[in-house]
Amino acid sequence: MTAAEVLALARAHAVMLATAESCTGGLLAGALTDLPGSSDMFERGFVTYSNAAKTDMLGVSPELIATHGAVSEDVARAMAAGALGRADADLAVSITGVAGPGSTDAKPEGMVCFGLAVPSFTQTETVQFGALGRDNVRQKSVQHALGIIGQALKSR
Image (cartoon, rainbow, N blue to C red; front, side, top):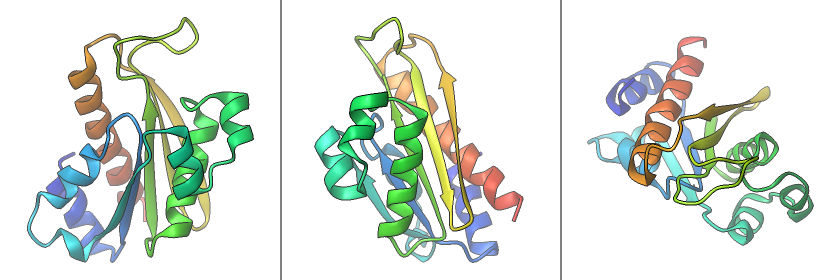
């Protein structure tokens, strides 16, 4: 799904969007705001690359990060919920992952966790894109997040 399609769905359902990004460094917000008229459907984006930023800007518990790691569904859920709670938005999506280079056996390069929050629920998922290189993992993460938002909007 393209950013234009996501914004059209958001406009059709009168849904305001927010993003919380770590490994993509604002690329999702950039994709959405590249389009004219996006301010009607995009409220704000949080770039929370460091753990301190996740805590300070989104209210993610340092204990949660210490227990599960920044790249985890638990942190993705907390990031999405934090963005929703701190923005005047109806839907928030989060991205946290290992874009590379560098990884561990438990969290390999290309592992990305996504969160989606709406007022009534949150959901998460992990995708293993593989060691495609930093730029490719980041671009695939943006595309996947657009798909998550699109699916959520279609099910409204």
